[in-house]
Length: 293
Length: 301
Image (cartoon, rainbow over the protein chains, first blue to last red):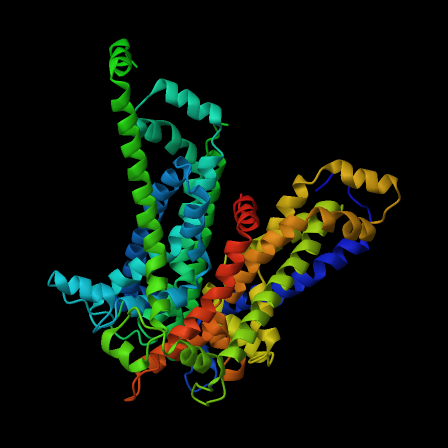
């Protein structure tokens, strides 16, 4: 709010109305609907629904499949976040250092940001293709028979690889800009104090990057949880079967294939709570985040 | 650093120091080149294959083709009708992708700007309430509440319409948040001067605030265009009529055509479609790189 704001009572309401109407219709109503239907058991043939209390939630906790999906989602999220952040950090540090070709490297390392996850997934299908994908052939040289979409762990590896590839650019962009915003004076002081490049990095640069890295941690977790749907759908060719899937994919499979509105809504609510926790965690940390400059 | 270490580094022959610096630079470049290759190769491998025939691709996978089938594959991708009903061409999907990308970006920016304007520049009794109403939407992406949103949109009869495709995606406050941050950084003197000169809120918005926000609008447009263009889950649910498919939505049709059927899968056509789906957002990001990076980094702080 600006000090010297306008003092017309009607106008701001009018200005806010379209936004509020749209989020009311397409955000709050569906969210409330999800919470409500998570307590009901919908008749699959459309003959009304029965109130079942927390039975849908209890069903989730007792479902071995749901626990397995949750476990995979956790491993997937941790792997993608760790791999894409560390590769992007290495590349950003080097791109910040070199003088010749800096712009070219920057472009080459960031353009994949614009490649849609399902398109990345499709490229993954080609690269890991059963008979003649380049990666499949490379692994065959080492005597490994890679089976995308057939072998559970092979498919999981392909998912992590494609998601990491797709997620490196955004990490790279933020880390590079974080590095470039470190004041020259700090860098020079560090240079005088310590000639060892790695010591300088871990003692000075890394702590200064911490706020950026922390913000990216949340971005990566959100990406792994929600934005990978299309990529997974492409890699399993729309047929999850016994392949690994994430929690969001299961919401879709149960809701739209299994017609289980109650169970799918309960899963949605669990995800909502998860995101809220993540946000609280983020705000708590952001409050305490350290500013050196 | 100890004196001994200092003395050592000074006494080291200069040529040795320079050589080690040089090796370091070579290593840096090697890492960057490897990284760039990692990003480029999967896409490049797919693109150089487009020129091959379906038989060659299904036999040898990705390959460096002689380009003899390049035009044919692009022609098939753009103009041959495909899909289950046989009524969809690449050019229709391309058009739909542009409608989704541009419509989404414009919708986001228009709604976000005026809402942020109301929040930042007006004394409003329920401002805090509106603020929280709007910014809670940042927390829950559409994917989380996908089924109920589908039910609601279905109930409104908006399946297979551009409204149903675009408007529910607009129902989150990212752009509002970006513009709020930006407006807060606009100097206070601007609005004071405008008021002294007798400009009303509408005139101030159109004649001063919009021109001042030009770069910000461009940056957000690029981010939103790419985001809208790349949408997959929502279009998959909301468009069942093939005439409404976007390119990214149509990917499903591509991999289904690769997997099923006894005929030789249409690899060439699929790869050409992939090329068309990737090119526009990548071009936008690369050409407007500095705006895009600035918008992305500054708006998320």
